[in-house]
Image 1 (cartoon, helix red, strand yellow):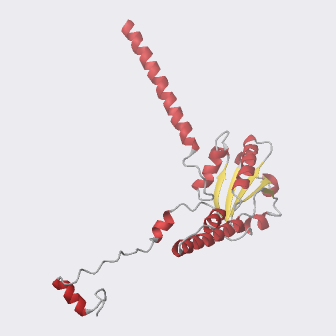
Image 2 (cartoon, rainbow, N blue to C red; image 1 turned 135 degrees about the horizontal axis):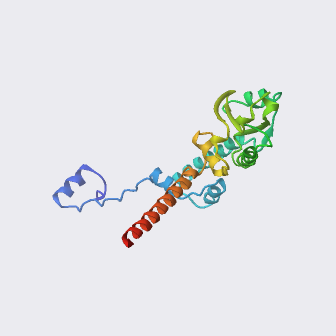
Image 3 (cartoon, one colour; image 1 turned 180 degrees about the horizontal axis):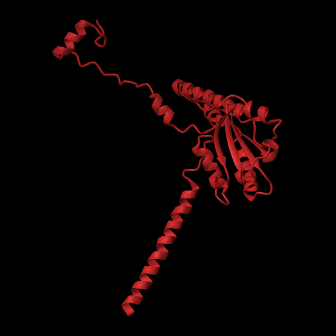
Length: 235
């Protein structure tokens, strides 16, 4: 006797005639969507992925996690290869070429010409120490102005030169570029604007100060006009 569940032409005819019941439809099993796997929370570190890989996973998810792990390790190695500075180095005219012009391919070099007698120079020196520790892929150097450039004018201090691939890319000459007492965040933003660093600051810190100044000025004017108006009404 022929199997009624067998997939044959005769059984198909019998099903169309209603002699045999319809063949049961097997539910389709969809493959996991790689985009859905990527959207899951796999943590932010290699250790996070290692912990998840210890769990029971299906083949597709494990493959994607292994790829993510390799990508994260590669990114960490690349960052480590670039983060090789981390401090502000003192230079002179004799070491300028080696430390600045020959610093290396695609390396940003921040050069601060200063004098200890200039208050703003001391402020920037302190800020650059913190920024050098935070952005270790950027080379920060400093030098007493007249020891780096003979007869360099005091009126030009502080001066900040930015080099890349041995070429001067940016220059800030004189205190007017920074303000009388710039905060660390302001200097960080200035470097961020020039794409030298990738800061987590969302906007220019000076904008908040300017907005507050405008608000205070508007408030003073409003109070004054209100006072004058009341005086005129009393007359």
